[in-house]
Image 1: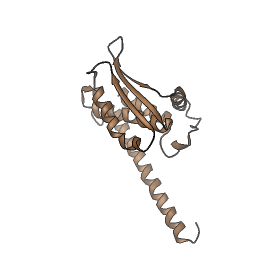
Image 2: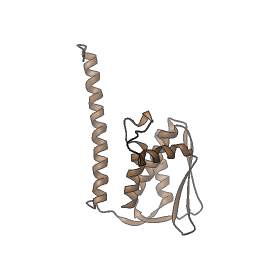
Image 3: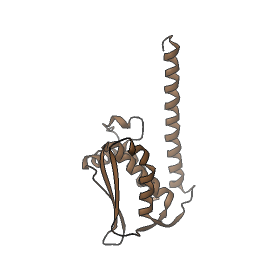
Image 4: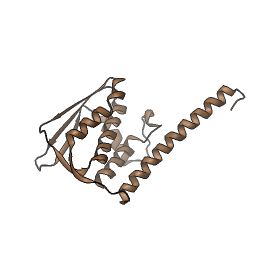
Length: 171
């Protein structure tokens, strides 16, 4: 560091912001590990997927307003429900949508909710280019090869995000 007080002040501010970001990421990891270990009980109940996706759409409205990223939601049925914890399911959906926003940058993500031939609930993210998921899955399967995406240097990698979501859903 130099003698310039402004430079020192800027360095302290950047260090403070980096520390806050690191603590936020650690808090998220600790919370997820507590859920996985059973320290935090899940509140399993019928949850409407359409309502959760609409909530995620509302939550991401402000960040999307400042970019050219749009979300459309459609469903073949008005009531597609799952038996799960609504809070954690919403968190997984929010994580996936924000991941798509970061990776795609702009465009339209169509979220389609339906049931498959075995009557299982399906949430399909249409409009995301396949390389987006391939990069994230490759990062998840091969952690020794760091992600090439520079914008994730301040956050979890896409592969790590998918892995965390997989843990939450499996719990």
